[in-house]
Image (cartoon, rainbow, N blue to C red; front, top):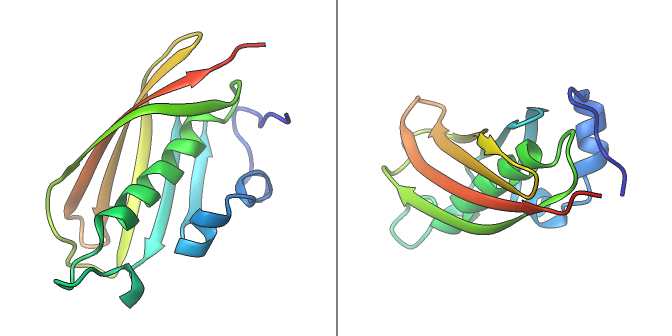
Length: 137
């Protein structure tokens, strides 16, 4: 499998992660990515809302998971998540969600990441902690 450099361009990121059909279908977009860091965003549409009018938890988690994919797959062997926990902190009041993922610790086989999801008003929406596994070659 191809591996991205430590600091890929936005075009390289879109070429590599453009095969994530679900993230694309939901409306996730890449903002930036580098080793241990990824940012993705999502414009909130009506189909992202639940019966109460709030953004569906699954849409928030999908965006966070896409930012994790960026942070945990650039400049390292491919990674897959093995455990995630999400804390929903607040309902969004904005029109866009932004997920920022950063590595807490990256080992040979396990990586630990935290993703913060905010809206475009600066409101904290959720926090996701994830453990990933990677097979070193």
